[in-house]
Figure: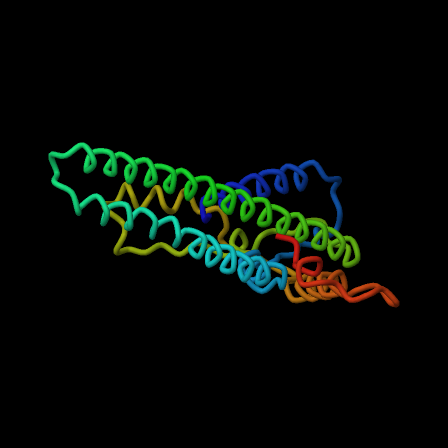
Amino acid sequence: MDRVWRMIGSVGLAVALVALLAAPARAEIKVGQVDIVMLVDNYERTKDAEADAKVEEANMKAAAEPKIKKIEEIRLQRDGFNKDSEEWRRLDDKAFEAEIELRTWLAVEQAKMVRKRRDTLLDIYRDIQKVVSRVAKEKGLDLVFAKAFLTPGQIDVEQVRNLADLKQHIVATALLFPGNVTDVTDEVLKILNDAYKASKKPAEGAPPKTPAEGAPKG
């Protein structure tokens, strides 16, 4: 996951820098920042998605239990026969097939959950992008960076192998001084959560939603 955020952030930084260089000269470029990690972690939709994921995992385990019990019963029945007998071999094959079916089922169910979590995370990121864009326009910000890119890098000398490695760390430093930056994280988070909570409320006069209908998306 960290790698995905670094890739997204790197592309965003490159695009932002190109836009900055291509922009007409003006007296002052207004820069903003948001703490992406803080937004994702504290967005109510993220919390609901995590709660849903735990329920799905529990349901999957519950559904797997009778399948596992069936395999154990077949093995127990198999062990009542001599290992050289035809009946032992038949039951051993049956247990093996049941185990393969269980593993296949688990793999499919886990893949579904991973895909759902991936899609939800991408939706959450799009939500953040939309609100950041709105807030930036309202505040007249020219650029909004992820906070990590506007934090001067710190070099851990304990991790430096030699002078050449130290030089590489210094040369690779992207930012030395961030200057005057407007942090809009709290404002963006409030808008995200207010909109999400409002979307979960039933329309006035409408009958209450059932738990399934009212379940949060993702």
